[in-house]
Amino acid sequence: MSWKNNQEVSAPFNGNKSASELFFDAYQGFSTKQNNREIRLAGHSLGSQMASSLMGQILDHNAASKQKLHIPERLILLDPFFSANGKEYLQDAWTGERVRDIVDRIQTRTSTSIEAYRSSAVGFAPVAADQNRPLTEKVAFIELNSTGFLSQLDQAAKHNYAPLHYFWSIDFPPPGTMEEDGATKVLGISASTPLKDIQTFIQSGLRARVVHGGDSASPRDDIHEVRAQ
Image 1 (tube, rainbow, N blue to C red):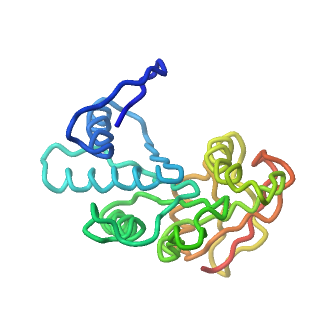
Image 2 (cartoon, helix red, strand yellow):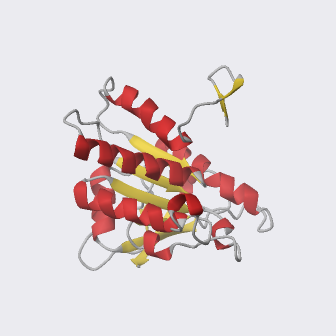
């Protein structure tokens, strides 16, 4: 394994810790110094597994230690990818299965909100991928059908659009919605949607699909269709 510092210089790493354990070590040092009101963990593709693993390690640490770490308020999975079949290093569990277990623990023990955005068909790859539908039913799930400006054949570009869309969307108000459920008015879900509104969305058992705005890369003109899971 190798790592790259903030000067873009790569160096080999010869330690005996996994990447997720190193991530936890870095977070542990950060958590004792930060004073932000809201911490977000965002993982793209395989990085969604890394972000989820960090959340699991934070929960494990806080359960065993008197010195508690700050628990991130939001976990964002950006076009997450979960490979099919069990893994030896996970005692034959599937990666998606492990992430669902962590999500269950998060939702049982914390008030952290979890969002998942799908922007490509990468997660539908035959044989290789696990669609992990049970996970999308537990979280605020948004289908980014707003990539019409990209070729349907260029799934790599659609896959890489998810983090661009999420971080760009902080510049604009939450997207409007075409539908509301019968009892609770909900906002569309984006990086600018307040935490309390994301929690309301999850509790309502809804999912969202972008139905307007696909002609441009910008999230400015996105409109969500909201419907039951």
